[in-house]
Every structure is written in C-alpha cells, then in structure tokens.
Image (cartoon, rainbow, N blue to C red):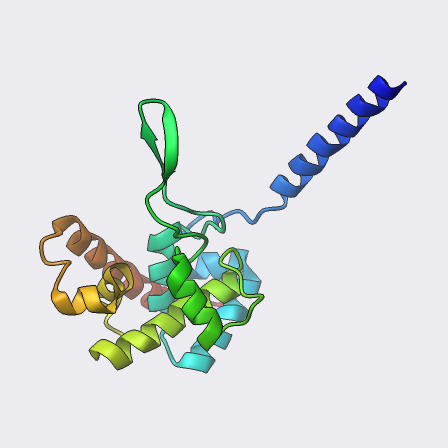
Amino acid sequence: MAKYLSLKAIAATVLSIAVLTGCSTTPPSNTENLCSIFQEKDSWYDAAHSVHKKYGVPINVAMSIMAQESGFREDAQPPMRWFLFIPYGRGSSAYGYAQAQDPVWDDYKDDAGSMFSSRSNFEDSLDFIAWYMTKTKKTNGIKFTDAFNQYLNYHEGWGGYRRGTYASKSWLINVARKVHVRSENYKYQLQHCNLY
C-alpha cells in the first residue's frame, strides 16, 4: 500500500511539473513583425505603451533590444559551459526577457522597480530596458532613437562603451547594426499597425 502511494505521489509530482512547464509563455510566432507580435500578445502592446509613457523611449527600439537579447523568451539565459562532459556554470548571470545580469537588475529594483520585479515578466523586463536606455542617455548622451549605440551601451555597459570596448568586436558591431535595422522595421510596422 505504501509503495502504491509513493508511486502515486511521484506521478502527481511529475504531472504538476509538466503542467507548470506547459504554462510558460511561448515567444511570438513572428518576432520580426511588431504588429504580429502585438496582435498575438495584446497585453504586451499595453505594457509597451505604459513603458513608453513612463520613460519616453520609442517602443520600436526597446522591443528591438529585447528581441536581440532573448528572442522574447522569458527563461532565456546564456548557454551552459562544459569541460569535457562536466557542466561548470553559465557565462554570466543574465536571465529572462531582458537578459539582465544580477548586479544591474538589483540596481534597477532599488531605483525604479520593486522587490517583486521579475526578469521572466515581460512588463518588468521592458521597464528595465527603458530604465537602462534612460540611464544611457543621461550617462553617455545617447539619444533614445539611436538603437545602434543604445545597444552597444546595453551590451558593454556604460563604462565599457566610454572606453570603446566594442571597437575590437566586429561581431558586436554587426549585432548592433542588426538591432538598428530591426528597430527601423519595427518603427515602420508600428506606424501601419491596425491593432485596435
């Protein structure tokens, strides 16, 4: 009888985990079209407008940064590093939609978020990106509309950007260009959306 109950408890636990895993938010089906994203995820449209109203950042730039960082995956994180066949940790503490690392996420929570802010929450993550863009504008004088340099700041940090750490990273320059192009596409799409 005890053995039967144990198997039943294990089965219930496995089923609970499967249900919870199935509840995670899936990324939009077309991440290159902002209208399509907002039609599929209408609560994201409301969140994006709230963040725009709060900070004044262009929705297209903030969303392009998020697209690059996580592909709109709530549980995105750097790949596991391996030594032979033994995992030994990830490259950084970056996590969630915004790929924010622990120290700067803690700064955000202290400054503009709350103790309940979560990197796996879309609105919190977009708010973080807008907060970071605002700090970038104040710290390094980068306009909100300059997706290329906003992204370089986002990736390298404000000090790294000032030191020009990106200059020797041709791959990063190419990624920043991609963020810029996507942001311009998003801008055009957003101007022609018929959402409501």
